[in-house]
Length: 410
Ligand SMILES: Cc1ncc(COP(=O)(O)O)c(C=O)c1O
Image 1 (tube, helix red, strand yellow):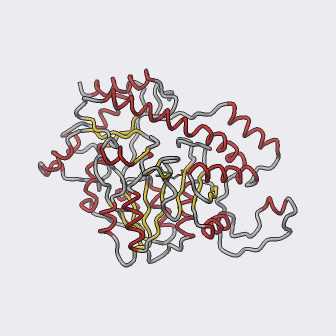
Image 2 (cartoon, rainbow, N blue to C red):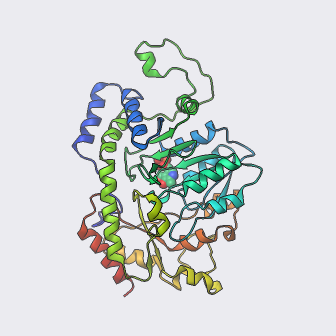
């Protein structure tokens, strides 16, 4: 289907095409000079000492947790309102994911106070997710991690160049992990980057991403090393040269494209002002005073009067367990399914970020978490709707989205 207003569109042009072509013609495709160059440029862009390119953010999250020694018997605290990879990679280490709630409707970001409540003697780490491109409260989370002796990993998939009190995300914890999946602010198709200030950790990330081998293929190809040893059990989580070359071009565009996203988001806010059944997160005082967001996605909450609803009857008791169905509770306010249908009829693509991870069948069976333990997450989740957002989204397209939203409730 070709949409008039797709959810997302790439900013790829001749520079990306030329970069890929140059690599093909160089006849060196696997991890080499382009990857090293992309790592240096990315580390400098986010203000980290080291960056290690990987095949995806998922690979990077797994590598970070594994290299930090997280494994069976450990608990790791993370939000349920995230993409499933954040949790899967913890489970893959053998550790137990423990889901914590989000701060509020305005800040659907990991809540340090709830994390603190969920710490046990088995807790080893916290994974903070900078949802939608907005930083978590890194002052509270770093203080908590430090005082309780926990590792802090940042899932920065949505947030390249986002900043908390002027400092870029990814640089607060032991490791920050970014995604370059197609729809991300910086795209290489698939790809990811781990950043850290810890030299020893960076060395281990590099070793473990390539089978635990002491000398990479390029070094041997160039005659710098004749042989290699395998000193740890590693993975093949490498990035290739084509992606790194495209990544270097995309990185040069990133700040300008983030600024375009910010303009689009500001226009949406203007257009949607006055619609009392739509609430737009990240416009609160705390966020405005502390955060530079990078607007990866534009989620809105349908059915504006959440606090009042929460105080009222059982009708609004949070119910996530069956997933984000358009059940009774939601229909009492605004039906997300109906809104999505109206927009689809007008060729506008929307999405949902996210069905909470603890509601998926695998997690319900293996790591059951009562909805009551995640009440804000569960209240918000069935009402979340993601509107189209990308740098080349035109004013006319944004107006069309806003008009369709109004019409959906007429
Ligand atoms: C919050 C979050 N974490 C992790 C990932 C995984 O990223 P990748 O697709 O690069 O593995 C995504 C991807 O969408 C994400 O949104």
